[in-house]
Image (cartoon, rainbow, N blue to C red; front, side, top):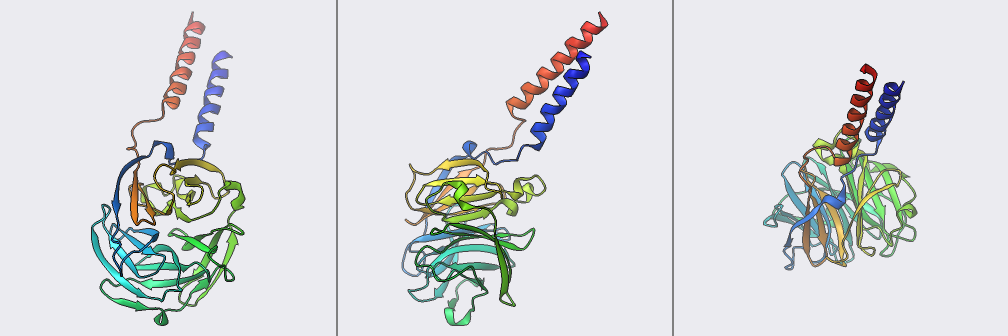
Length: 303
């Protein structure tokens, strides 16, 4: 009887661990290094968005003045750039890689999304591109702040800065210039002062099928926080950015799970994911305790 009870309790404990929501455990991340972005005229003035191109293994950054999309390595060396002749009224606050050398670029005030074919060394004029989708009416400097592409479902996750804050999931046909959107969850659950950018974790190959691929990273410039959250709004972890910057507003992740945060300065902070090692100590303790109790019960029964 005792043995059966212990087996049941151990099984229930392991089931609870198995069904716990997987998490990056942001508290285990460390600030590995930082680097400055090219801030000269024609490049990145105030870095407002950053995204990772999984096909080239490089980062792409855009400034809110929409002067250029700049490609840099993971340590900040410039690879190339494409000049944007979009005019001073275009407020580029969001950028995400969607595959095949293409990006979705978001304009904050009109909340419009454009598909961009990146060609290094060229100039792209606003007159040559057409908005593929809009997330809402004109919003004066409080509109579309972040975009992230989910390659599993070919959908966009987007965040609206404030008044009201919003987190959307959208299906967009870039060629037909049609789409639809829904509220993913109530943004007020996060308790943030604003929403500055979002990154899906489904772009990390090793996360696929683990449950991590359903989670999101959301950054708030005014709250100076990076959060990991579920798609129902549950907060799983955070990184406090207050000692680093008051103008950090872009976030992306590479294939290793390392996190890159862009700052208006312009610069990038790189948070390194801890190397997966062994099961958590709590897991070992639970297993050892259960095995010990089972052994004790077996010896007692034999005696």
